[in-house]
Length: 249
Image (cartoon, rainbow, N blue to C red; front, side):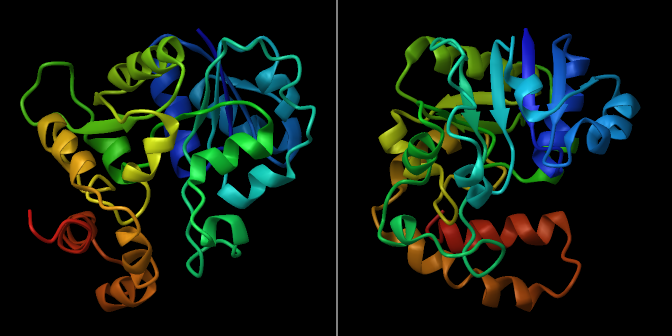
């Protein structure tokens, strides 16, 4: 496919590499325009573009930018994108850690439903509940023991299936996370979030999420991570997430 990726940080940059290696034609863009992304694009063999260029002609668009930045995208940005093109939302809300407070989310609106409102079209939620280190280093061929899972939520069955195929090509087992209204089950501080689960455990983790429980845990994240020091290892982060997000497991 032609895949446009907006954002070249930890998740966007890794997905650009992986999907290009999987044979897709990838265009990347960020807030600095073509010149700002050209060096990165050339280093991994993909096409540098501005934001509009990454969207035009794409058969899948992946949004990999901080969640508040989605509200600043031009309202007409997706106007010419065909309705059957999946738009993948990889974002998470981290108030007090990275993001400014967003009143609607603080009041309980589901993150990806808010994103869909900001860009004016439905999204598929994916690649938000895996750590960047895991995405970079722990992908395995399909069928390999110990393969990690990524949850995928959305309302369009065909679009969700296409995104699940891309998850598989990236080296991870896709797990159906339900509708977009169910995507709160894979938001930060839920049992399914960034714990390096395999597919059967991911399914149980999604089912184990309880409404409203994650917010209290999320608000304590600065305290939890401060206790790990300045440079926690990947194993320490996974262990902390498992302990906090799903203490009964």
